[in-house]
Image 1 (tube, rainbow, N blue to C red):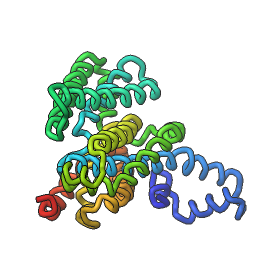
Image 2: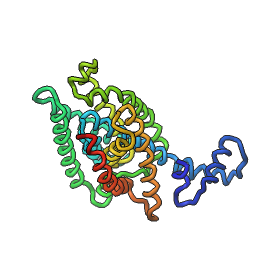
Image 3: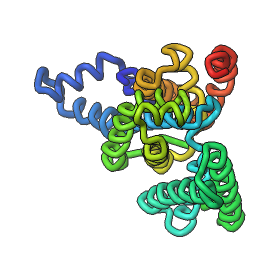
Image 4: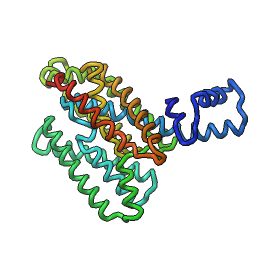
Amino acid sequence: MAFSLALGRYPLTLSDISEFVQASLGLRELAPERYALLHNIIVDIRLPRVLAAALIGAALAISGTAFQAIFRNPLVSPGILGVLGGAGFGAAIGLLISGHWIVVQLLAFAMALLAVALGILIANLFGPGTMVTLILGGIISGALFTALLSIVKYTADPYNQLPAIVYWLMGSLQSIEMKHISVVTVPILAGIVGLTLCGRVLDALSMGDDEARTLGVPVKAVRYGVIIAATLISALSVSIAGIIGWIGLMIPNFARLLFGPSNARLLPLSALLGALFLLCADCLARGITTAEIPIGIVTELLGIPAFILVLGRTRRAWL
């Protein structure tokens, strides 16, 4: 995180950050002009996006791990139940009718939840939902909201609204401020802690529903509870930063390769790896060129080759 704070157009060193921290704690003196400059760069500009990168990376990675454990499939990601399609449609509506960040984020979050609820409703339409019908319901819901998003893009003003929608869909941490972080930190951390505590139960579920029931696990309640928690934190992440792909798919497989299949260990370590990965991706997005690259593009460029390498090694563990 200290390296991420130092990286940017205005050159800072780790020593500058250490001086600022010591001055903030009253351990040393800094000239008022120098302190004000460092405060503006570190606290007002860079700290919100660094915190957001760590928080969003952890949330997307642990939700991907939870979804893969619930569906017992290493190719499942947070978007499997229509979260990304719903959030994209909600944000596009917000940009079309208002453009204010509160409206955009609230609609993105609300539509992401609505998409998941619709997917679950479709899965249970003709009887009790199974894992296969849940996935199919999510695919149908995601396709519906993606089609609705296309309609919104078609009707948007091509000079102002359409570029804003396309840029939001690429994912970005550029406009995140501390007020955004303060709103989502508590619920996301609560979701991460809750999913981490479900590790042993998910290990029991990985043996099969009947075996889990014999161990006293309420299978249906656990399944829907984990889906709701993972959906909430991934929807909150998407609502403040746009669509950042591949983390929820790649990081769980990479963590499984390093630390084994036990969900009790895998969930917290996936969150840690996801935070580190998105921090590194944000550094690249800010440092590769003079113009910042949307972070969603960077995660896709990094994620595709990394996932191909990881997939071959992890495949045996899931067969």
